[in-house]
Length: 232
Image (cartoon, rainbow, N blue to C red; front, side, top):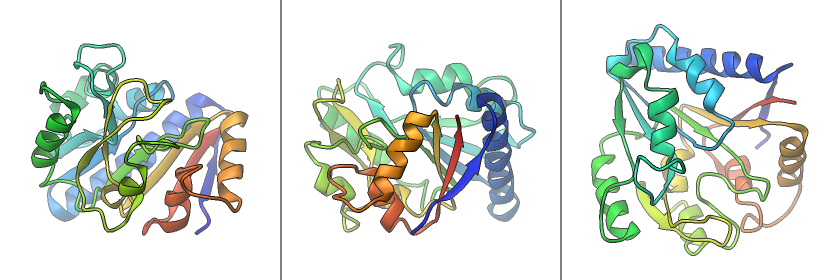
């Protein structure tokens, strides 16, 4: 499947353009089903997008926000994706949205993932919007090359839900939605910036093993067409 590219002149234009598309998708879901759900990613790229989205006139009280993936760290950690979302997205009007986190205080990441799977079981079937990121190694979500459970995470037969992942490049143990949880989002987005990431994407679109560049699974096998939002 070929990804659709949406190209913007600047980071600011990208943030506004993506926020507009996501706001439209969430509003359409609310109009159709009375509620909407979105899974978002962490990292430095989404901050401007989050701030732009928080200003959109959506019925935020009818929106559930969760995370594509998370580090097994407390939500007050600077490495927490939950903190990033609370500080940059769930502000202003968007503070009325409900957040379903993936991190829970538990003895192990596996125990936290089990709780998160139960807590998120009623949303995202499918997600109205899933916004993915991509690392320079071709990982997306916490699907890392060499990840401890990568094959299981990418297997379409693995049920929807949250699982753990450990990898050399991951730092802390991770909590991540499975491929089957994300691939059929009504609006499936890959949000990237810079020529370096564009080159990584081009490499991922070439023939090769999904285990080497896991973003290939989304490019090749996702039920929904991948919408790439990019600015240099």
